[in-house]
Image (cartoon, rainbow, N blue to C red; front, side):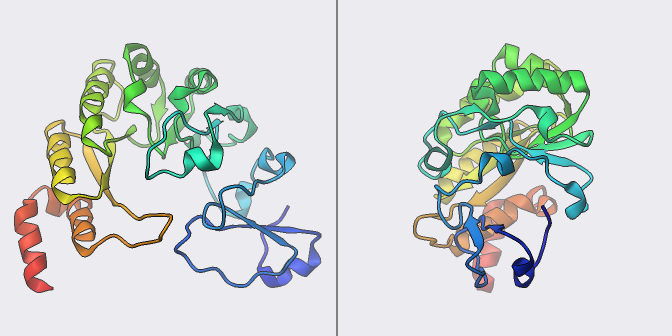
Length: 262
């Protein structure tokens, strides 16, 4: 397997290309290239022998490993493509299949919802790996037992959670309390915040600020229609995610200045 440019594909038996986002452009590719990814369709999958081959990290100059321990999710969030793309939660791989560095970025969508995923977390702790679940952990599944296990894991980045609706505020508060009680570090956990209605999102942001966690606002983009977030949603996300501004300027003041300069 080799990383190559589309015009060099003639030298190979077959090529594979992935497009992650539906709203990005893609050049015309030769017919012998199999195109997949959520930006193209949600059903095309790689053959198992390719899906489970250990990546050649030297192709990308990475000093960390990447992979999935599980696929799928138990939830059916209206804004998420995972249930349609990957189905119900299931075991996918052992950490040793793709981990070739001490630092490992894991892209599971709900690792705590799968017994295999929990066993893999135990193995990760035993192997002394440093990991980042970059899609976040489900706060609703972080009980005392899970928090104790997560505290044993070494984290490449702060533990990531999500507060995408007001219904998630109580589970996030409980999860944060348990994680801190068991000394899961770093203690300034990272929380994704879906932004659709500004006032609703602002209430969640205020709540997270009181918990002393790091919110990260994500303006909603409808993947079915490719409709872009509005200007106010983008401005809100800019305010939250620019930490120097977020910690010194209230949203009402920031929004007033942005509106006046439009």
